[in-house]
Amino acid sequence: MIDRRRFLAGCAALAAARTAGAQSAQRSYRIGIIGITSTADLAGPAPRSTTAAAFVQGMRDLGYVYGQHYVTEPRGSESRPDRLPGLAAELVRLPVDVIVATGVALRALRQATATIPVVMAAGNDPVAQGYVRSLGHPGGNITGLSLQAIEMTGKRLELLNELVPAASPLAIIWHRDDAADRQAAEDAARKRGWKVLPLEIRNAGEIESVFKAAATARAGAVVVLAAGVLFPHARRVADVAARSRLPAVYLLRPYVEAGGLLSYGPDIVDIWRRAAVFVDKILKGAKPADIPVEQPTKFGLVINLKAARALGLAVPQSLLLRADEVIQ
Image 1 (cartoon, helix red, strand yellow):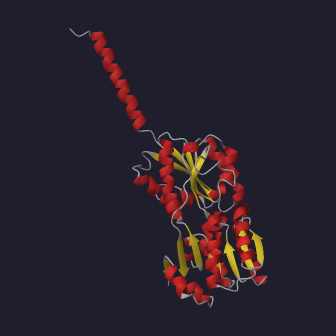
Image 2 (cartoon, helix red, strand yellow; image 1 turned 45 degrees about the vertical axis):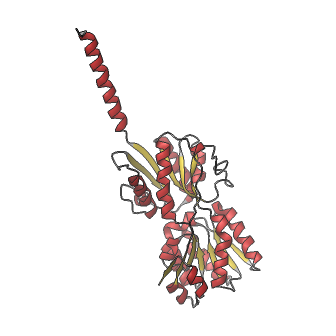
Image 3 (cartoon, helix red, strand yellow; image 1 turned 180 degrees about the horizontal axis):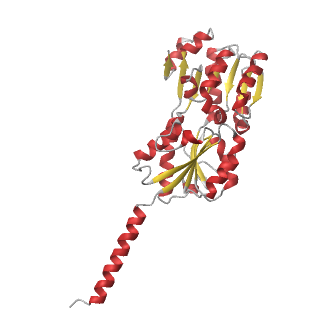
């Protein structure tokens, strides 16, 4: 004969286990997203930002349903880096389970938290900047994907030299987070015998003034490094460069799609999509300290022929043959 009290106790334990399991399965994570664009552009299951949209797509590819398995807590600085510390502090206070961050926000996040996991979506030089101990063993609460921008600086100048042989003086537009990249660009330019004109930019409000300074100095070409600050304004940057009659080379393809001349670098949209893989690992229990930083393995050369013609530049056939995409 079954002991009635034991039977009822067993039923109660089974029901409690099922309830606990259901609650665990239904947990919805809060994922912070911090970027240089507007908060509205980063928000929701269908963000206007192409990079944030790529992250949401990456989560979808991994089986996460927005609103059911996770929601995002977006914070955008409206192209004002000085706002990033306050926005980082807001996310930490919520709190969130993990934060996905553009490279220019990493300084603020490192100051705001040493415990909440941070996935960088395109850190410029995370080891040199002190965000990770090494690429293979990050050692802290930050991991993710790097741009590998510094290693590609010399290559971008080599391509620019083929298109604009007399590119001296060379103007370099940089932000304080790009100091190492700026140094690499200066070194590569001087090896070619070019004079260098470094032009620091603090925010997007200075776009017109830095290009005016380059034009006034009769720069032969411009290297645009300040992707963290300028990326949301790619079309404006390309337009100002065209009006200033300055050939410009960029790290990221969206500048050329917006009318810029030439870019060579990784696919930023794919990097944000890949950031979802890091978030997935962390949500499943992996520690950022143990997840190696991923570097891009594919780099694309994109040339805008319309922009070249407007500047009176003849693009060598050898350069066209090497291009991954030619925009007519």
